[in-house]
Length: 393
Image 1 (cartoon, rainbow, N blue to C red):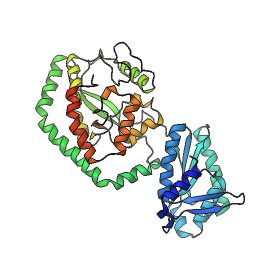
Image 2: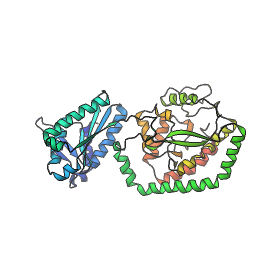
Image 3: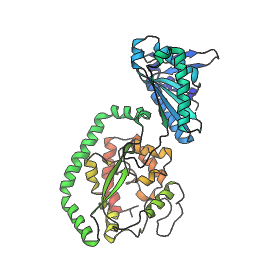
Image 4: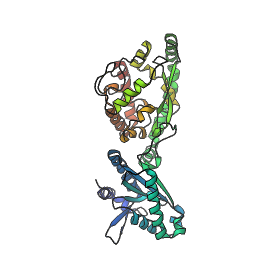
């Protein structure tokens, strides 16, 4: 769908926004006959969401340009008109312009940018915009505007422990969180209280498992591994050690990367064959580790991760860092739309029997249909999935 058609549909589907004072869509016609629309903030956020999805499919860069001009907009009545005219004079008809933050920040979606380096693209855009603002506002007033460029898809550096997702590109996600603040607070409260008492009640079992691990194989009781949490923030997940202390992670790394890229569908010796997410008969796993994995008891220490707020009881499985290197752009959405969890739709729907893309779709379905009732249903199904051992290796 072209951007012009998309805007027409968004404005048609949101008729109330056109009649709201201060948020109405504005149109301007130029000498070349072009008509451009300045859209309200809710329509702009919806357009940004759709353009992100389009960029995911096409793989082409999109730029969200923000013009911060709160003081200028409040002090001069003609400032908005002049800024918008400057934007329209330098952008294409397919680009989308409107309020990113009503009354203070104007947003522009520059879609399907070419293949040049980001530095070159940024330099070109800034030069054109600075010149246009200077012509319409004068150099003095134009200097009061701050221009920020946000590229999508972002470059996710797996070596950076901080959040990798640029929150500026996802206003719809944070608006959704604000709208559902009370249910999310309840979810966090259930996580914290449930894990606190869970750790107390299960402490004898945790101690017994730790003792057995210590007695049956050399090495630490707990296995610590860096995982990627919500918004790409790296944290250290805890599990009971189920493998020999000295093992080569390259085996699993190669297996997972082949599975994600679709090259690991054919059965391979020592592996379970097409679509599984774990290695069957993994030689690195200890005898007691096989039981812990089959019963999912190796996951119990993650209650501590949930108590700390790094995970939730229910949510998508947190990936290891090297998985991220093979992600398609759309795969990242599973890390943006929900906090990772100990159990989830994937775990109660076959676990390792599903393909990677199917797992991602289940994660996205969970995020898009999330409710406390859904969490309860998944929690109730989890014991059956654990006891059946289906898809667990």
